[in-house]
Length: 115
Image (cartoon, rainbow, N blue to C red; front, side, top):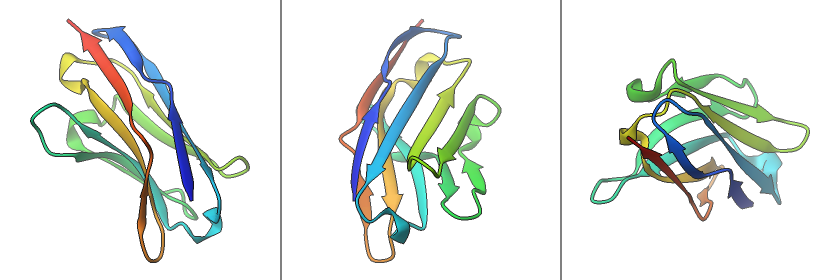
């Protein structure tokens, strides 16, 4: 499985960005997909996740009500709509896909929120 992210960038506080993650390969084996982020000097943390079949979602408390994760099953593309962005959202965002036997990661995309 290959994951390609896009959509990061620089935005002002209160602005919006949409991240995309295109999955290719043996995608039918995936159990869930999600977005993680890692800020400088901090551990990587889960932002949001979505189950591939039920499309049920879960979010980190820090982004609830501001971020929305969705998945287009026809194109195997996952999205993260980020609204009301805050400086503390600044991080490298990674796409993750959980398979039966292993996890897959994208290369990461930088999101910077200026105050």
